[in-house]
Image (cartoon, rainbow, N blue to C red; front, side, top):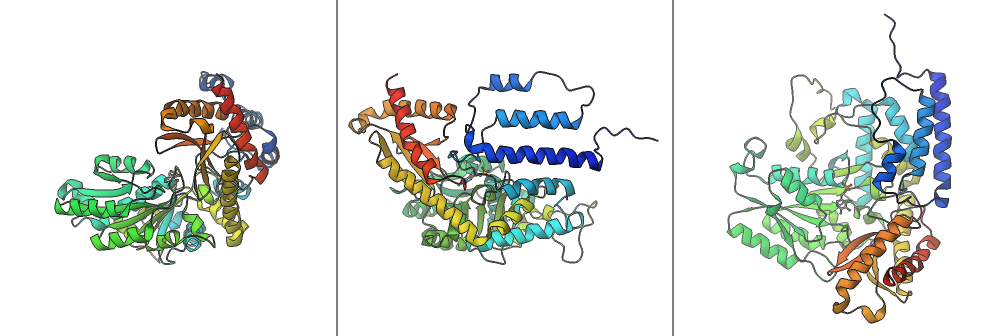
Length: 485
Ligand SMILES: *Cc1c(COP(=O)(O)O)cnc(C)c1O
């Protein structure tokens, strides 16, 4: 039989196309500063550029023209979170070595579900997880694994908590076999918590969203009171979620005090450090960041402050055995045991798993601890510089500064009173929309004390002082334009 294999490329052709693609990627990365952050096109425009409505091609096309067309399409119609003036949400510039790592990982294509299928990839993931724990000061003998992002890392932590804290066989009997379980977090906690409580049957109504102090940190007295009230009602305090860097303002909850409350009541302490845990590596990290070492589990996002290309999250648990106790089953068609092999399918939710460790592992070595401390520290310093520059702009009002997040709004001094709130909220929402479409710079938003504010988060090793200092004048100009109708 002669097989017809339109998908294969002979090695010569692969090299030729690969070199051309790498050249184009090099050009793209090199020209990013001269491009807009985003073309700001509507879905209609993008669909028409793509030819969204055309049917599946009945027969194939050569790889060369396809790759060229895809490169052009992506270069012309993308938002570049690697752009030096991208400050939205918490999405980093991808490390170039991570971009190359994705090519290598895909070429070998190990299935990192079992050691047998991915011998060196499994061990690279183990080393990567250990290095991340070391970088943030979490115990060296903790367990962990890489997942798709902060949301899934938090899910892993909360599921481990559920297994460990239920006084019955919750994996078999389910939640309905015991008293109601409660989870506690501040009202500033990221939306993964609602989604997760919903998905695993706890119900989002089981979460006690608690008040914060003036700095938007979880109020510990309210936490303690809420747990005591639930205990009196016969509920199980399952876990407390402390944020090490909230998504809106970068606030760090009082983790050391929260840990003491957890100890008193036997609740699991999970730290959502998706964004901020890596700041624990900084020489001036405060005591609450160091206290994340007390947590039963921690979520960290390498695709944020380790600058890994999407996607890469990391779940860490203090007691390494908690992961297999939470996730392992042994179907008859897997014969993976033996030696002391680590089989990641037993430690988390996914079964077949990609080699996302490679990009993180290479970047950790490319920059080293010192390199990361320097880059993260510079991001924090640039956010502070931005905040100060905002303060010097007459029509802007600087609001919060936490880790590398600065929030502010367009608010001429005479209109900062509560009677102007609604008008200013609408004005700033429109300002944000114009800024995002314009593509000169990109920020997102937050709501602080009921005020709609703009929010710049710097997790971007390409950003310079000139980039952040250009932002306030741009925002003030757009604000005046919107204001004048
Ligand atoms: C980003 C973030 C998340 C969600 O992480 P994803 O990687 O987007 O899934 C959760 N919590 C915090 C504090 C975050 O910053």
